[in-house]
Length: 188
Image 1: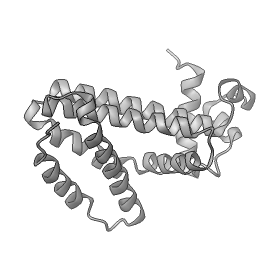
Image 2: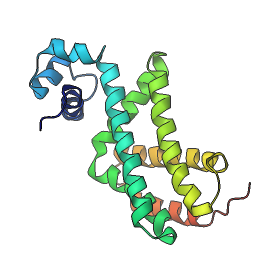
Image 3: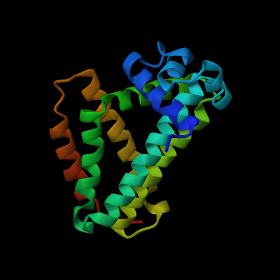
């Protein structure tokens, strides 16, 4: 069964923007990759910024689904280690995902029309991490929200350092982050 056009466009945008970068990717390039007319892209999306926002939100939702699967398939004592492994592996296996994420962050800082989408993306990440922390600490989302925000910042910051400096020891940094996270004892 063929994917809906909107999904085809998002998939094509990911390929094109990953290869060319956000700035050099055009609606025409995306349409060509999706095998559709450029006008059809505009039928589903107002502009390239909206495509990028939707693309990264879709990836964020896939991440949340993967974390929910992880929670149900990994023993509670091993959830923290398994959950920390995912963003580290993504940096190594899908660096283009983080590069597009940073481009969206920059756009969101400059364009108030994009800022809500960036905020939604970050909120989705925080909520997904907070869900995992609830399992570990046995506490509510309100209680784990701050820790989740710090972890999102750590994941994004470590990925940025690795992308800018291939010699950066990501493995060691995540090992230290795991030690720090395992020493947390949440107190409301």
